[in-house]
Picture 1 (cartoon, helix red, strand yellow):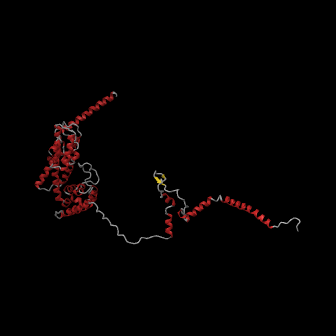
Picture 2: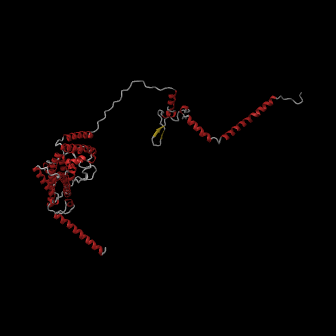
Length: 467
């Protein structure tokens, strides 16, 4: 390494040290957000966790404004519903950041707690009570019965017992424990503000669109009304409803940016059906939502406030979705038909008899199925290694194979075979003819001496000099 490299390395290390010091100084001054605070390794300079939540002053101010309008019973604030829905989205994101901060810094104490308690608010309540000693859950489980189910308490008790037996003990110092406890208090405070805002939004949504509220619930109705308003919602096609709110931030992991998981996906009607039927449920509810919005707009012009149509649509959709989710009806077992008592058809005749003769057992198979009493049978092994008994094959007098058991050829196959064999025997036909001629000539030679002798016997012999 040269002098220049060493100088550059020293400069970079000094620069990194200054950056880390600057981050800690910013954390001490409260300039970092909660998302950046999660990755800070040293929390010793952090004194108050509340000053890192930049949304908390806005939430408190808006809650005070809501309380003021509720006391005055004023309806002059037209954009209040839209502001409330925007603030609810920001609150969800802020609650997710606080929950991530708690889980990251509390995981060394109880690694399995975030898997056992999926609800962020129950997680924060449990951390506040337990602290850095999970054995408190075993000693006093009645403290958790107010907000936890019995199966959840049982799972936590088993996990705490396993931690105690494995001698896993990670105690935090008082400063870190206080920061985690303050973060739990902040999360519960944000949840309380969110509940109050949602209650106000629900009341306002029910007064503006009672049928839409009766169909999809006050929270989802307020979200749709804050985007378009009642008149604008009537003009939106139902095919665009499922995608509304898809790209909005949410602290629920894995839901941002997913197709057709918008505002309508999280209404209670859609969430009540299994996962594989929710896409169909969203389309069904979207069509009825537009109808309910048009009914509300028509009733508002007539100064009529009635949610009868929304309740009827909700009842119809609920019954239809229950029918879709129910298992199919079991097919009744069809009994066999009553047999008809009639005589069986017995085939006979020359044609059927010949067919049976072709398929009958040969003499060789009959001999194989026979065994001599008290004698060992001869066997052989086939290609698969299985032993096959030979029976009485070769020990009985063999008979000629019957013509009916021989392989039979059809007339067409026989003519083709004859044509094929005719071409091959053309070359040998002359040789055969010559052999036949030779046989005939030899036969004639054998016959000619006998004929000549017979002719000579017929001529009478005369003695010389006789007259």
